[in-house]
Figure 1 (cartoon, rainbow, N blue to C red):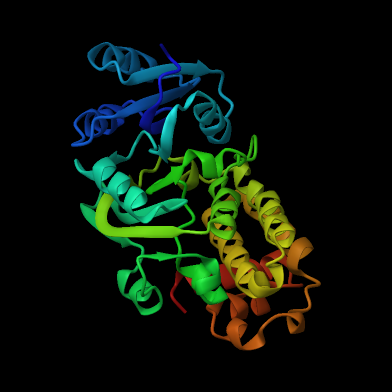
Figure 2: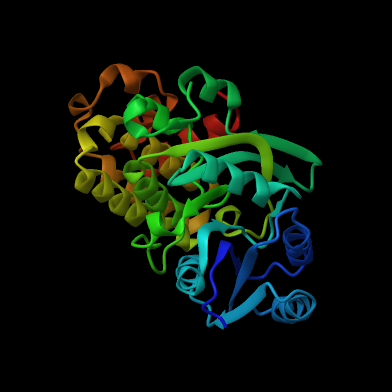
Length: 331
């Protein structure tokens, strides 16, 4: 019975989101589209999530609950992919939620365009402030993307910086991503997965309706600074190798450098204590001897991060702290 196929598999990794999980699951079971399964991977969550999942699985047979010890988001998604039976795959984080017509709209888009994957417009929700942040910048996209279907060869390398590198807010052909996986034990796992999809897709489509609502909370992995932020350096190595193996590294090497330097610097500024110092030491080790003349200088000089690195590379940690204070004071 479990081998029966369906159109969509929704993979929901679950960890310490008991305050939002019901909202997420309600948004899924009330979709206007019906031919899908919801694969919930309980990642050893220590709170009440497993009981919430069990209650919902009794209410709706499309919900399948699997548990693993706490292995992290990457392994939860990888295991979700192993259980998935759908022709298409989409990922939803358990503190986020979908518009009621999200699955129907994404399904129609990917079917009609025969896309390897498609992405939708996102509202980022700041619950403590009652604000929304729209992602991506539609006006930026419309300047460059003129056709309903495209791939990376249709765009300039610099346009890569305009994308949201998230796994969520996208729908994928299962046959397209069947050999892709998320790096085990690391956070920022979306970056290499996005690179694999972007570089290998022959057909990418999009829907600029707000279908996905990303909740920005203080408890999420990416907003909880800690030692795991050091993972970004290993993730950057993995992502760079994906570009090298694709044969497209020369086209993208400058934008990849810009993207990675920006991410590293932002995460370093967000951390504190000994982790910040370790992050700073890794910046020096990784970028201290970089020869910027090997990259597109004009493109670099258009980016603030290039000038920021001129202020911090091969400097002491005390000098970096002075730079940080200037940044936080808006100078």
